[in-house]
Image (tube, rainbow, N blue to C red; front, side, top):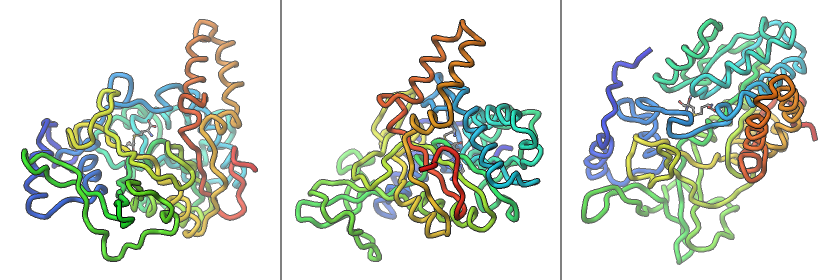
Amino acid sequence: MKPPEATAPEPGRLRARLIPEIAAEGPMRVSAYMARCLFDPLDGYYATRPALGEAGDFITAPLVSQMFGELLGLWAAETWSRLGAPARFVLAEMGPGDGTLMADMLRAGRAAPGFLDAAEVWLVEASAPLQALQAQRLAGAEVRWAKTLEALPDGAPIVLVANELLDCLPTDQFVRGADGRWAERRVGLAPDDAGLAFGLAPLPADFAPPAAWTAAPPGTVVERSPAARALGEAVGARVAAGGGAALFIDYGDLDFAPGDTLQALRRHRKEDPLAGPGEADLTVHADFPGFLARARAGGAETPTGLGQGEFLRRLGIEARAAALARRHPEAAERLSRQLARLVDDDQMGALFKAVAICSKGFSAPGFEP
Ligand code: SAH
């Protein structure tokens, strides 16, 4: 499926479109800038040129190793079993990228009798080019697509996974000034060359800095993602109403942590987030505290989150790597490198976190106290 608006990517075009808009309407909230860079229908990164993998702009855990998706597949099967093995349930992935994670999950899921027969598989994807890639990658599997979580069928329990989705949900940024007052960081125009530049604007009238920010020294930047918060509430309400559990893996802190984490990645290199709007992937650290608080407000439970390394170890990644290495001795070295990349603290193991949103009283696999 190709949206009628999408055209060939043209470097510099989104920047050229944003400049007169900002000149006319004033500096943009960082969340609005991120939304345009990622999802502008004509020139947004995900709408026109998403490039995952070694040869693209960024790499993710399912592309590092098939073990990641296989373990998440076993997590989903065990979750289904703990839900009482319902005869029909929604198995959903949000932000499925090139489809690798779901392909690996479905392959691993065959080991659980009845699991795949009960699953109605849904992919929640906002990007048309990625949806096309997913259709290729998952050819032969019975999968359906939705553009939003709300469009998934209700009335059945849900088992949802999402990897590196929260980091692309638009965020706002706030800065504490030397006088202790907070201001909002916005994307405006540089004085001389009419390029893009960060500036400060007064706080929105309805916005009071939360208590957690009180101790922040001058110069502190704080981020909040309204989109992550709204998603947390929607996922919380969904699992509370129909039963189920959702697993989100992403990078960021589990507790409130100030800092400017807005980052653009092109060909695996960081660049100025204002340099090439729409041409590079643009991410922030996941707003886990806001996301999980709103999920609880939506009626769900959120067990204590943990590092990706600890989570994958609890699911048995070490035994899985050893079994694969026994079967394929020629790949042993590669497997041990992949394992280290996923679980070691100085690689993805500690920066990345796993969190869950569950219906009341449900004990999600890997999150047992
Ligand atoms: N999960 C994949 C891809 C991560 S990239 C992996 O781990 O490899 C982020 C993915 O989220 C892309 O598929 C992107 O198009 C999708 N996405 C971003 N925002 C979204 C939204 N609001 N709704 C649905 N999908 C979204």
